[in-house]
Length: 233
Image (cartoon, rainbow, N blue to C red; front, top):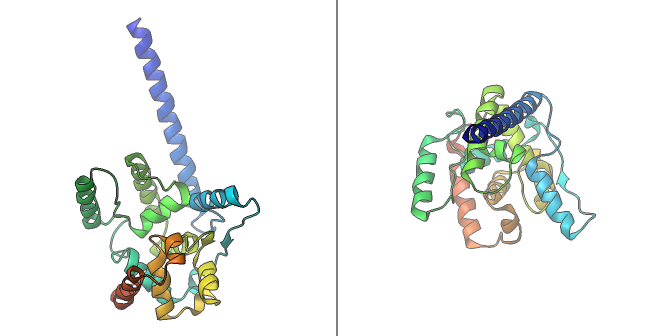
């Protein structure tokens, strides 16, 4: 009887391992394809569209891919200053940031911070959900390693700027620039770039609360830091 139970457990474990490995291969195949092909959507975009269409079946996302050279240098600097000042120096993970996040999580008794780099955010946005769990963070780490091993820093930042959310149904720098300033992403000024970068942590909230003091303080901080960071050429 016990042998039968153990045999069944082993088979189940092997099946789960097999499914896990198949998924990793599927993810890595996409990462390799996206070295020189642009993603047309992401897990976060699909989730956002589903959320919108639950209220309005005819809802559509606003998103237009633009190449790296067609995005303002001000926005590149603002995003790196706001989200990951060590972007060019790490290999996907900010160890100091992770340590601070762990301390905060232990203090709160739950997962409330992730210390995510731009590379980690690309991994999450492309493939995963927004839920906070240790399983998801583990998968995020695996995908981050894949991305860092296959893509240049320039490509990582290009994809990031083109897929992140900037309001309800608004994805990517071009759609954001058109939505908030009526111009292309290439023409964003220093101040406009800082204002957009300030929205990234909570874009749907900031979309309707850009007059808040919290937002103004964040914009000012990012604006001061923009010329203290380097971005890929």
